[in-house]
Length: 91
Image (cartoon, rainbow, N blue to C red; front, side, top):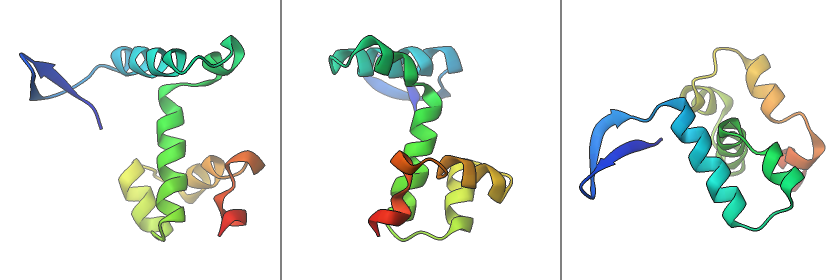
């Protein structure tokens, strides 16, 4: 999802997980959210949000699992288990 940038151009090298975590925290902080909400966000939030958006867009569970690297439907179900993240109710 993310790649490094060198002299303004993308390079074929994925970012370290610590860098992705920092990018997410900086982006959420820039949105001027309360500190407790900033703390709740992580790089994993991107994976959960992507799964929800793919489901909303009509992709089937197999496609969502492939896109997110999920190895079981149990993992995917956890991404969608909380009511505030339940896109099924919005369909």
